[in-house]
Length: 119
Image (cartoon, one colour):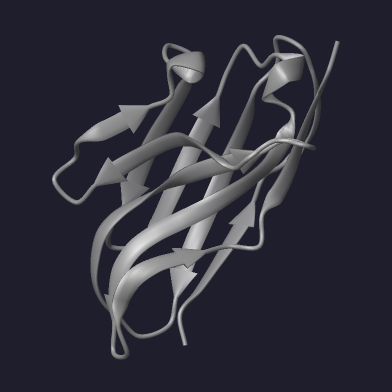
């Protein structure tokens, strides 16, 4: 069974930084892309950043220039370096992977890690 486990969230002051990590485990035959989404209270889940197996990245306009997504395919891990954090970045951050397991190809999600930015 495939699992995604996030770590690295926490409380930080505005202007600070956090590094989020996500590790995928289980029988994974192929990873097509991994990335991060976030959901703030009362809002829909939104894309933050993704990276494909070919290295192509996609960022939400609100985080461009401040966040950097990277991936270690060998370790099946994806990272999100967040800099110059703002209070509006406060949300639960979810790891996502588009991958093929023995059972199916599809989206897998982590349980989420809370990021809180104080002003």
